[in-house]
Length: 558
Ligand code: ZN
Image (cartoon, rainbow, N blue to C red; front, side, top):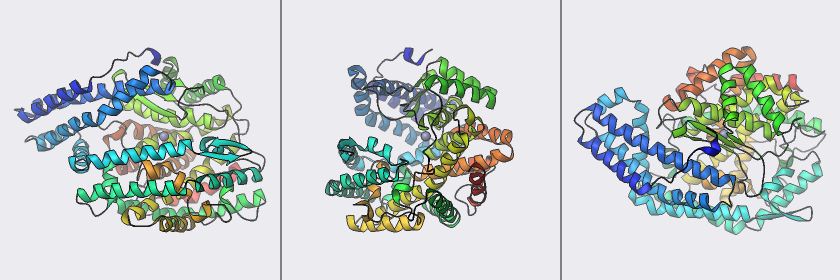
């Protein structure tokens, strides 16, 4: 069935919650383990129906944000889902308290119980009000940022448009864009500081109500991290400082010489070439045709899946008025259907849609046959699916670009230098939540110190406002999704490992990737990495191979 024809009907959340509470009773009253599982499966099916309808409504809303019907539907789920997920939490509790728990753990994946334990530890009626407050402050931040306008080239523009100039091959232009960024942010300094301060305090309050020293532990629970903790993340960041940072400094020095500049400034960071960045040679139809060819050549099964997505019209990539501006991959589990939304703009970002987002879709498609509660796994695992696919498509890049080497160089350089930036964002949040009393000025000082630690090659000097250590203020995740960001760094590490592996033996690397994706959330992250033949990113030495081999790959591409 085509995605546009998937039948939508509002899921009645009140009735749904009632049905789930019936399952909770069923689990409690069950006389044997089979009965428990039957009630559990019924609850999972209800939840799956809920999420199918909620994500259909949301998808159709993003296709046309002026559509009143789907706006109403989306709002309905936004309002109802907290109540509904409370009901699902009760399933978790009943399962954990079941007298058949030992048998259940043998029959079901034990990770499900880990998930229930996390749900139980991080949700509590005592913090509901604080959570609502937190959500409202996030909306404030969102509205402030999306309403913020920047004066550039004699025009007023939103950050999303201004950002387009940060990578300009004209140095004066990108410098001016970053100055405009600093000036625009500075005008809202007081609001930005105040919003973040309230967010830190309301999160700290939640943690303390639940008996934690600070928000760090609760933040990890909210991210549903099953097999790693803050000490392990710290070891990962140490790996980055020791192994990656020196390599990146050397590579950036080479780019600096190539660009013929004296000082490597913040606004030079996205640039790799004097003569402009690589652009795809194809239009939309061409890109999809080339992508189909690439996946057919890559692997029969993957090619087949791409074809089925195209036949189901599961891509919407045209920019048009009223359409939501971002990009995502989602799914409608009742129909075992994936869907990708994007806004093509003619840049190399368009290629990422059919590589990155398609990697997500492939893993979701595998997961339809797995365990719905574990699905594709945590965010760090899901981003491995997408970021690794970006690199596995490399051998076919000549289909998309006249100068595929140039694209690969840019892709690899930005993937590599992303990791230290992500670590800054992560360590910053650890320090902030461990010291909730820090003043705005002290927070900025912390941020600047971390810049020197992870990106010593980069200078902010002379850039209004940004030189005070405020680059974090437009990093949306720091406000809205605490502790989320490191997941990208962990996934990038695995993606780069797949790239290195694919150069030794492409077929073997692809086989390992498919296995990794097929396992979805059924295996915890660290073990997934090991079973794919890599060290877990948290182990000492995890980045050694990547750090040793990538400069050579870049040299060959140059
Ligand atoms: Zn992604």
